[in-house]
Image (cartoon, rainbow, N blue to C red; front, side):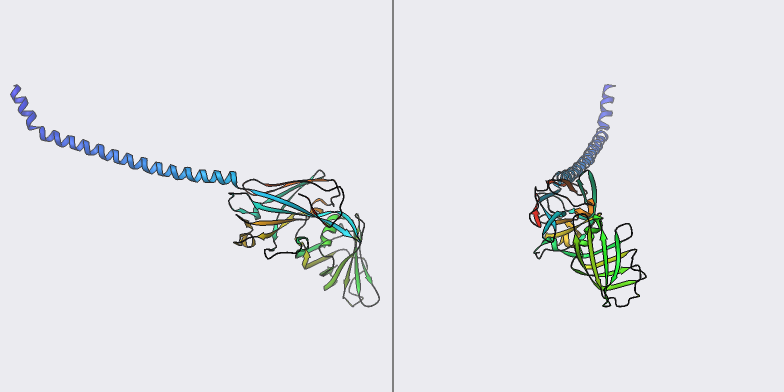
Length: 322
């Protein structure tokens, strides 16, 4: 009986070897598949970790930095009045990802009032500029009956007409300043139109402004009445045209790859000026010894922060604030 059992085992030895081989091959295949899955998973996790790390680094490092602030003091007849415009000088933080300034918002606070300004356009100045406060751009102002004390039409008897605007609205004052000494297009009451008029500020005392617009309209019957209901003024060479109570302008000063000029995107090595019409934004000029705080907040990353106090006395037209 025992001999027969041994003979049976001998007869099945080949089958057992094949079975063992099959099991071994199966184990190798399973191990190979598992190894492949582990390798792929580790590779994916490595790439994901690298990407996440890069994004985290960019989030931490990205942002804007304000290297300085300049201010403009409005002067008239030799007198220095209030701060009416500001410039923030902005560059990206070290290691920052490119930042789209079109998506940035400017938050400003003065005298209990907070305003938010958005991007309003770009004025290239990479070739250099004698005075950033004299940069020109397309500007316009539409003055209605709620914005002024009076708009009158005066005929000087020589076939020329003068439009005299008197206003105590600081938003309107801020915009009219953009056209001082400029040739402008004027349309009043839909009856008086002149594309070569000239605008000049003839009186200012800090609370009220009088503007004289000289027109070349000859016909005495051009306007329906001496009292005008509204006036629309525009010019392609308005000083800081486009800055108002809703938006700021970007001026690229250093922009080797033209990213700011073409797309308003600031990146490594760039330097821009942010033009802010503070009088229009706050409906007021800013006197001496007043605090102004604010930040230029990009869509991601750290904001450029300002915290300034105006000087004890205004003694020049352009001042350094920060």
